[in-house]
Length: 311
Image 1 (cartoon, helix red, strand yellow):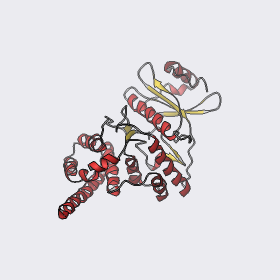
Image 2 (tube, one colour):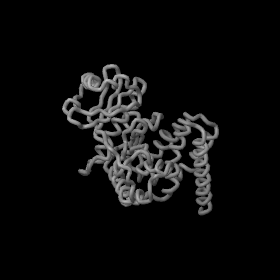
Image 3 (cartoon, helix red, strand yellow):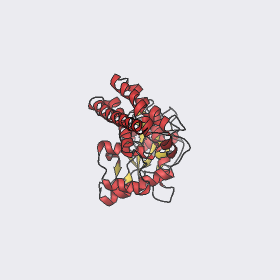
Image 4 (cartoon, helix red, strand yellow):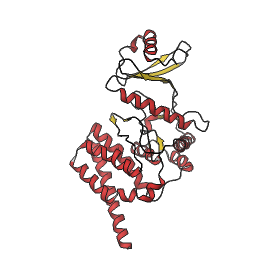
């Protein structure tokens, strides 16, 4: 494995191309396995020129996730990176251990996954919300500009950024109303003060883990990390299902739900992924997004009416 650990990009790729002829036509988001002479198998990816930032973001995500998940001496939740860097022609390469993921999803496994995820969130700390390089959620490059307040990061760098890119009249109108009626309730000054930056996987849907290991590296589905509110991680878990109540119990046994309005914030965190899918695929995902936006708007207005009635 020593030869695979070489950090000189040109020499590393030259070696691999000599041993694996079909590596040469690698293009963006194409992956393969490479078996070293020792018999150990690696998973490798080489970007195209246009997608080099995406592979760089994946490598940076994996490094941050691994550091947080191993901080207490536990095994890494992510496949270890063996080599990463830039080629002489500006492409990004990434090699990780090849991990065979199990399909078992027993209650015990799901609870352990929730527990380990929460522990990773607790150990992956930062001073500000954002990330030092762009990351991609699906095909969408995320705006990871650092912010001091979670409310600003979420409403501007996540929801607001997608609303601007979608440029849809209904979505834009609903976002404007949410800024007036819902976001100030969900992300009040008191709530903002309680939320601390934690490293997130960013795209943890049910097809993206195996057994008690986060399957964070795949040709199609890769981590899109940033430092955010830990509970934002759970939004996509609700969108597609596949996470049992044991998973959420295991998670919240370690990190209790932030109250008030936990359930409504989960809808807001799920909304991001509906908007992202609407941007990528259109169709029914837009109607799913606007449905959530209308529900949150009705709720926000009811909270305002209740507050006025109490005055």
